[in-house]
Image 1: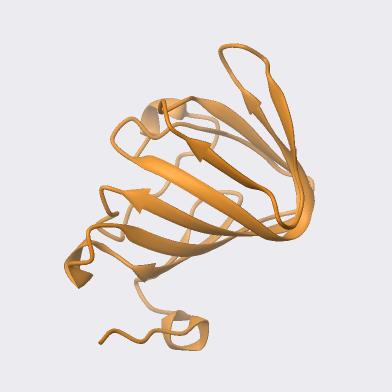
Image 2 (image 1 turned 60 degrees about the vertical axis):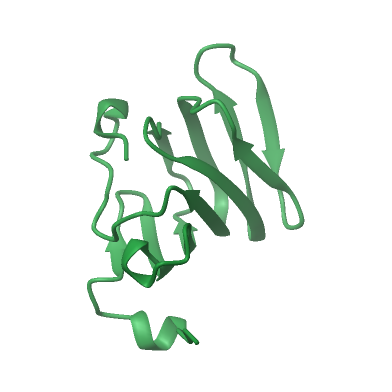
Amino acid sequence: MIVNSIEDIAGTEREVAWGNGKSRRLLIESDNMGYALTDTTVEAGSTALLEYKNHLEACYCIEGEGEVVVKETGESFRITPGVMYALDKNEAHYLTANETMRLVCVFNPPLKGHERHTLGDASSSY
């Protein structure tokens, strides 16, 4: 059985500053679950251009409010607590936090654990 907590992960290599917030990697590839699970914060007032060329991602908002805009189409989605969005086609997208957001995210295949974005550079995708 694997048991992790945010308190256990704080200050370790599993707490990654990704550019516009923090990603706390609760499950990573070495845990052998077949997916990664993160608790991710996005700082209020920030916008990030993100793209995952090698991973599918689903995010479930549990705190805060923001917006996801698909780069290619301009399609926009309001994200609030209780809303999930999934990047099922590896879409490059802008994630804007109007207030600090907290997301529970699942990645498939799993993250190794060290991945991070370079601000404004979608080519730095996971």
